[in-house]
Length: 545
Ligand code: TEU
Picture 1 (cartoon, rainbow, N blue to C red):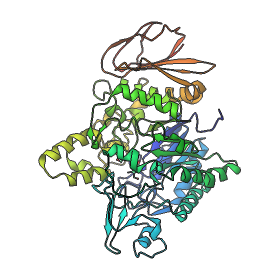
Picture 2: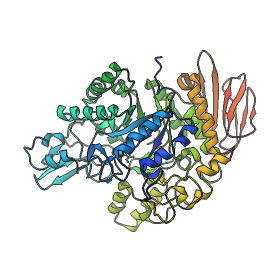
Picture 3: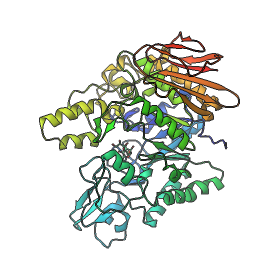
Picture 4: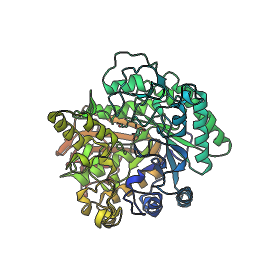
């Protein structure tokens, strides 16, 4: 397999607003990232995925870009950005930028021109119609907003302040490729392309829509010209830089990417699929949470490992609740379960991603009032709830499912505001109350911390090609508590056993196995024989066999 720098990589996703605030306005900034680069280097990561820092009114915290070639002043200046790139590269790390190409801010000059008149040259940069169809937005009851100037509706799959670009217009595509070149010339090493699966739009005729999750799969994603647009993007950007000796990494965000659809995306380095991330979303979507079907969860890893040339492995990001709260046990077994998922992340085939704060086992925050929630998705959902019962249901859903849980300030130490910003400054999101117990400084001093476990498993992953590229094979998939799988190559074979439950479990492998060496575990003692493993709650073991 051709070896590329990002293949055995472990990326750390930085959500700048919540990472580190150095100018004490309560919002994270680029200087805060520079300040913490040695921490990231010590963690052993390959590169940083930087969420949007472009000029933006911050209606969706930067995923609404008003100038693709400028830095949002709250994050810093272009000069600081360029320093950050140099400092990242000086530490032999890489950086990929989060690029939002499916839509712009409604304050982008293109949209201001486009909506000014029907015959404006930029009119066809966006989707305009006389009448809306029945599409729903991720944030709003409808995906169409009436603009009174020309009395037409424009499409927005997300916030009303995020009008969808019309990729069917070759002018739009050309603009997008030039933006990518602009940042590559500044030295970035690639992109996480926001909503890549949605840039080609289906026919807008009104038709019966399935539930929201299925609407994402069948209507919003995998559009008729998507493969063409992606291939053209690779040809106009990645291939151009390849001629100059630069291996540009592009990983696309792909809600709707599923078995049978991956051929659309085969030209980009990799894709984030969301099969496992939407598994507990009921017919009503994110705020209609269902119990997680663990066997299906495992089956998704099997199916997508077969489907995808090079998977991207993640269990959380800025759009989902905290990993250990969502999939683990953040009360009695927080440390053990956080470590278990760290081991899972680092022992699957593909490029692995750590979301900021998961490496110390940060948790969701306790719901106090609806004001705790700043995310437009939560705020708009609250505005749409009319009755007390609807509000109570939303409250219980937000408690576990809100994107806000991933956006609380990183807990650096036990000082006020967890060291995110100085005392007396109010951070834009409240700090989780457990910051005195859960913070980086305390974790660094604790040999048994989640952080020190992450450092070990990240090191294992980045230095072992079998864990990076080896075959992936699951056994006893019908087991409702144990995730048992193998990673193998001609050189080595590993057995990973995860007890994804708060119960003690006796597990018998499908066949007797010759145990060579226990490489790492989240417990100091394990009971492993060639035919039986006695697992404590959330026990995770990596064994060479
Ligand atoms: O998310 C797009 C997307 O796939 C949504 O499902 C997202 O995961 C979220 O759950 C919406 O409910 C991307 C960004 O990751 C997200 O932060 C932005 O809000 C969105 O696009 C619009 O840019």
